[in-house]
Image (tube, rainbow, N blue to C red; front, side, top):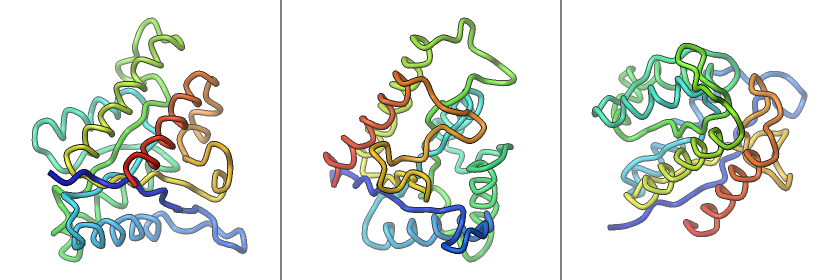
Length: 189
C-alpha cells in the first residue's frame, strides 16, 4: 500500500496588504489542493486543525462510523472548516466526500464534556493520541496538509496549531506537536 505524503500547507488568513481572506476562499484552497492530490492518486487528504477535546471526539466518532461530515462550531480555523464542510455538500465538491478529513489536534479541554483532571500530563497523552492518528492515516495512504499561516511561516514552529482561542500552548504540548509534525513532514515527504 502506498503511504501518504505530509505537505507543509501555507494557508494564510490575511493577504499581503493585511486584509482578511474570507473563510470561504481559505476553504476553497483546501478543497482545490485535496482535489489535486486525489486526482494524483492519494486515497484522500486531511488538514491539521486546532480542536477542543469535544471536537476531537466528534471527529474520531464520525470517521470511525463512516460519516464524512461533522457539524462543528467555533471561530478562526473552525470557521474555515465549517465553510469547507458546507462546500463538500455542493455539486462542485461533492466528489471529495469521503476523501477529505479534518485532522484534529487537541489544543483545549472540552467545553461540554471536559476532561478531569486537565493537566499537562493528561493533555500530552491526548495530543500523542491525536498525532498517532495522523500517522495512521499517513500509513493508510492519506495525504496530510500541515496548516501553516502567515504568523507561523518560516518559524522554528511552523504549524498553525494553538494560539487563537487556545492561546499559547504549554511548551511540553507545543514541542510535542511541532516536533512530531516536522518529523512527519520529513518521514512522509
